[in-house]
Image 1: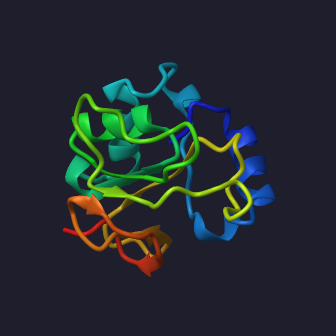
Image 2 (image 1 turned 45 degrees about the vertical axis):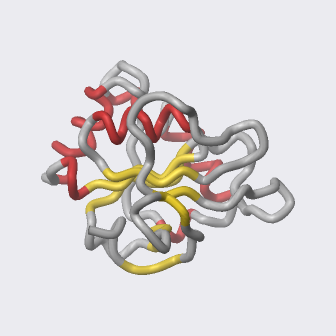
Length: 145
């Protein structure tokens, strides 16, 4: 789920070299409201026929993870310079170590990576613990249960 138009999101995924990891993507443009509105996450639930607890939002923006967790989803934050965990609201279950733009295929313009049902075959980041202190690595499946 992105606040960008679907076309912009597709170009970002391809330019970042991560397009092959996505079977579907969603844009807030479909529901005419932006994240972190609960309506955006509910749209993904309805489209996938999934419960919130089966979804994991992987994002590079802290407010996206706050909205996802508040909507009942799992969340993972990919930390980057100037964008760390916020000290308010529901926290993501998983966080990455700080990534620099030189070490990540994700560009500074990318805002979120994926909302996928748990058990999906796409590569999803998972952490060492649900407390959020872990490293990200590709692994089939969803956020840890």
